[in-house]
Image (cartoon, rainbow, N blue to C red; front, top):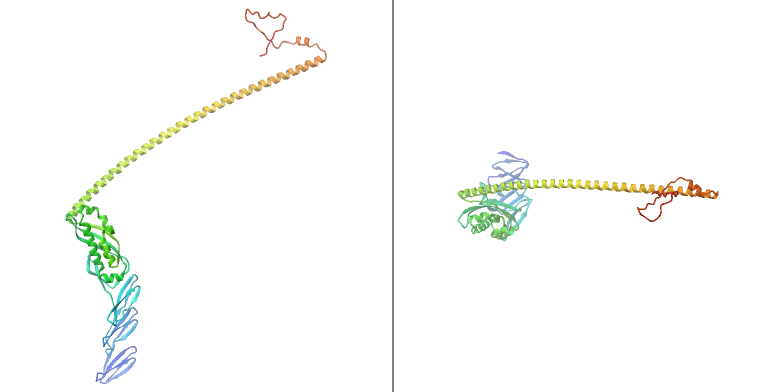
Length: 408
């Protein structure tokens, strides 16, 4: 006989000697006599968790947190806690639900959200080919296992091995594929591993591409491996499984070590020859540039000399023209000056004649003998008419005749 205390927030079962149980919810104090006391375990779930309740009749229920449940063995066979599924942005989950009629319903949940499945629901688990941790270009089966599907463009590296050219050269073609999921329903119904489907399709395209070329032709046409037109089977298969191939990038190739060494040597030789040719070309271009500059400077010098000569000739011509204009101006001025002097003399002569006539007129008015006065005046002008020897045009003038003088 003893007492047991069930605290507040706790529960317990008390069994009597007949095996019957009684649920005790605290706070209580229980007296035990021929009874067995069993403390119940309490399970709690946070907001991002839920409790899985499996009852004795096989029914399973999920209770979303925050919540608490006591593991009563008279009701539950098992109680345990699970994390809710956090669906990130640009991610989706595929949820299946068992129907009462026996069928299965499927629905798609787009993130971001916190998903708590019901007891009859489960998530689709994807098991795709994934990159080998030791070699990212090698894909292994079930290398990528997940339940949240990314709804954004993705890519993967892939090396197509054992590619044989028409001349039996074995090479490895290195590729990088960029893809985007467009139709989820088509993908779920048409493929269980889309990465494997795209791997097989691109492998067949590369083998078909290299199978009709020899090694040298393959090396010269590697740029075509970055063109989507070279991947017809890949595009067809991707369209059937709901994917869109955005582009394929050719990352290079690898052959046998011996062939690779020979090719590296050939590439090195070609590169050296090309560099030598470019150096010589640059030297020739430099020589041509110097000659052009020299010719340009010589032509410029000749132009400057010509301009100087033309300027000098122009200055001489302007100087001569100026001197000629000065001479002409001086001549005109001299002519004008002589003309003015002559005009002044004529005017002076006219004035003197007028004064003389006026004087004589005044004397005549006074009855003065003008002939006597004029005869007594000194001779100012003498005009002589000379005849050649033996001329008989006239007699010599008289002794007393006044000489004829002309003022020329």
